[in-house]
Amino acid sequence: MEFKNKVVLITGAGSGIGLTTALAFAKEGAKVVVSDINEKSGLAAVSQINAEGGEAIFVKCDVTQYEDVKNLIETAVLTYERIDVAMNNAGIGGEYQRTAEASHSVFDKVMQINCNGVFYCMQEEIKVMQQQGSGVIINTASIAGLRALPNSLAYVASKHAVVGMTKTAAKEYATKNIRVNALCPVFTVTPLFDPEAMDQMKAGISERLKQGIPMKRFSTTHEMADATLWLASDRASFVTGIALPVDGGLTA
Ligand SMILES: NC(=O)c1ccc[n+]([C@@H]2O[C@H](COP(=O)([O-])OP(=O)(O)OC[C@H]3O[C@@H](n4cnc5c(N)ncnc54)[C@H](O)[C@@H]3O)[C@@H](O)[C@H]2O)c1
Image (spheres, rainbow, N blue to C red):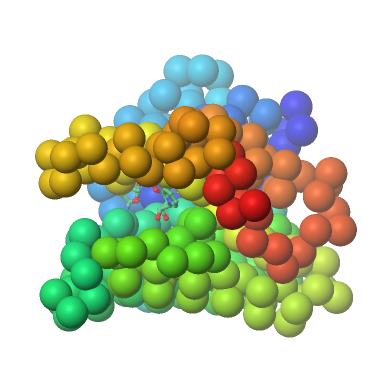
């Protein structure tokens, strides 16, 4: 039980990568603060963790609302007294449009959730981690934080911002025993990345994306959870400020 009695907070934990990672931390003995804007899926995640013998609470939080984020962090500390690991994972994909046609309102929404949300969460988490003298933060970025992804300008902008914020905070707190890293998933089958839905928008696109990955397959949420647990563990004790591609060789 690598995370026995550690407190792990995850945003966007009601679905996809966040949900699988929350379940994996709970299996390793962590007390998990499950957070999501979607109350139903967040509560279901807590029930699943409890049913598997784990410990978790749900705190509803829209990461674009700073007051919500403050309440999330306060509730986590009131309940479990500390936050050892925080995974800032809540995110949306936005629209599939070329730059000239991209909607301003979608751009603003994607930046609010994917970029501002990570900023607000890190700010409050770091305050707690500084007080307790340690902590690990993992921000879910994307391979779109490392390279271009045509027709996804807002998403790419938001994920490059996540990588930049991760590196900056990592350097700022490197002597304070706080590590900050970014996870950069390739296409991972979740409600956010649904190959069938993509093919309905543009026939054959999912197969083309898959063939672009050297391993010729999409990732699973378990592969993202495994990488996150490693980044969060003492086995990665000298790792800070990296943007870790978990991508079947795409960015090689
Ligand atoms: N699935 C992929 O292919 C892929 C690839 C690279 C990066 N990512 C990133 O991984 C993260 C998780 O994505 P996923 O694929 O598991 O998607 P998902 O849709 O399954 O899960 C995202 C979760 O975030 C929550 N959420 C959305 N807006 C929110 C808000 N304002 N406040 C709080 N919670 C909110 C949703 O309710 C949902 O539970 C995202 O940051 C995404 O950009 C995903």
